[in-house]
Image (cartoon, rainbow, N blue to C red; front, side):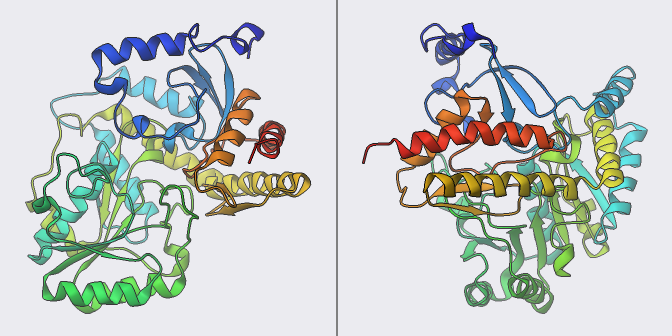
Length: 416
């Protein structure tokens, strides 16, 4: 970070000028999750470059990145092996009249990697994948009801978006809710759906924004599987956010629970746009009958990136490595908080950490902490789970903890 960039005023910054230009030509200046990111004042909106575990904004400031592009970057920005695969495929073509051989190669890679999967099909975004899963489940069962955990995020389409703007009651007419990790609540929702239950759709762990994260209990995971087996419904696990970070075989594999259908995106191509649905043979025929498509779904470049990403994740045990780095971060934050006499809560898997402050209903402490840490070179989030990548090394974690120490000082200095 240059000294000049560090002292830029908000009105002088390139970021501020880009925001002003964007407001004239983009509704609200930004859309979707970036518009609702709830980042503290002073956070950049526009970025110029990235490499490894570091990002640089348009004003030249560099940060150790703990959002990893909101999850897609698993191996680090611009990983050399992934970029080499991308360049080689791009030289042949990307958007063609149909898929390239790389599609079959990648599908074979997925099926070999995932114990539950007999087949796979590709899309572009996480919402594409979750919606395709639900559509396939309904086609296979000839039923309508979809059970989802209250507060879980499965995409931004009308049937599942957290916003009600432009959404009709008919869009959600067949959604029923249960509480994550609450077996009694799950069973009540199954009873309510009755013989019309098509699927239970569940995230690999509870990662609602602004609340403590919850790993699934073995009892809950088994109850979801048993409910689907007893009723003939499909179990869909939404791995869009978690895929390849917890276990490359699938996040519930260690619980002994396998899905019928699974939605993937974000990290599977290390930042290139790709999503996937994997499934077992029971749902193969239904997958051939539904009409799900997109003009760019056969793009070869992202598939080449995914092949490289999956290979590296397998060969280097990426989940274990980023877990170790996440534990280093977690232990360091706990030590700093104790040293400053500040109560915090850390939850979720270390690969996807969340830190919240006690007695902070308006997130004043969280925002003060993150703003101060940002000024010292660490890009953190006060409410959303964060992400680690294979590019984060011990020295990067230690540098981030030094930035975090300034964050704790800022919290301690807050006025009541």
